[in-house]
Amino acid sequence: MIYRRMAVIGIGQIGASFALAAKAAGAIRRVVGVARSQQTRDMAMQVGAADSCTEDLAAAVAKADLVYLAVPVRAMRQVMTDISPALAPGCLVTDAGSTKAEICCWASEILPPEVHFIGGHPMAGTEKHGPASASGSLFANTTYLLCPMQAPQEVADRFRSLVEAIGARPVTVSPDEHDRVLAYSSHLPHLCAAVLSLTLKRRDIENVTSFAGGGLRDTTRIAAADVEMWRDIMAANGSAIVAATEQFCEALSDFTDAVIAEDWEQVAELLAEAKSYRDSLYG
Ligand code: NAP
Image 1: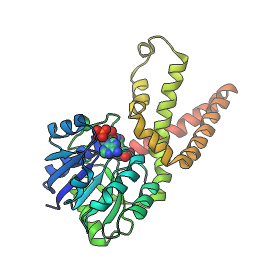
Image 2: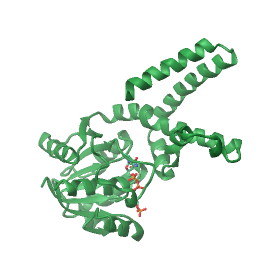
Image 3: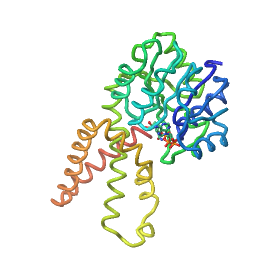
């Protein structure tokens, strides 16, 4: 048992998956889930992610030694403000938000000095949302990025042991580095999937899926993700995302210029460069 009582604020896909994994590992005795809608709360209970659920933030966190924030990024600030007066001294607050600089800044400004904060971002998840899409094995063999901020070593070590207990690999990173890299590794890919989907919609080809193999499904899959979640990520990491899209447009121009010039050697070189990088990432 690593923590006695965990409050999961936003018991959707990530919050419920974390709770299921932690309970299965025997690392947490009791989980209280928080969501605004009865439907989410009922589903969290049905999938076994929580021992009880409430919409009352203060009641949920009052006796918790671990508070796990898994609401959309832009909702984190208000949630931190609302829970602050009720947090137990010495408890650990952590989050699962997909961006880190802004959230870590809010935590330093808003949370009371007698509680600890560690920023977190599990490198796992799907395009689905809500507790119905949760899985206790979601984090197995994945990286779990951590921004320990000012947390004392023993507090950080204890949370790292929970991350390891759910089968993930904890990796420490600064909030700024996290957001800079994620703009390329996650936010740009999402934008590409959305832009591809938008392009097809605007061209309005009838029965386009009859003319497509698995590639179209694969490359547009993440465009099906929750809109609010991704709007918040774009808003929180806008300048890094713009820098990444500028580089993407440069590479796209390299391709289109070579095709316009009918320079097939250059096209082959660009494709080979892309292929060898992709192979080096995933074999
Ligand atoms: P999700 O399935 O939509 O879950 C979010 C949950 O938060 C919902 O169940 C929602 O339920 C609740 N909620 C929303 N606003 C709230 C508020 N103001 N107060 C209390 N509860 C609230 O989303 P998710 O995929 O789990 O994402 C949660 C967080 O994890 C986000 O910050 C996201 O950036 C991050 N993340 C997601 C992924 C991924 O691939 N899915 C991966 C890593 C990190 P109600 O509407 O009923 O309140």
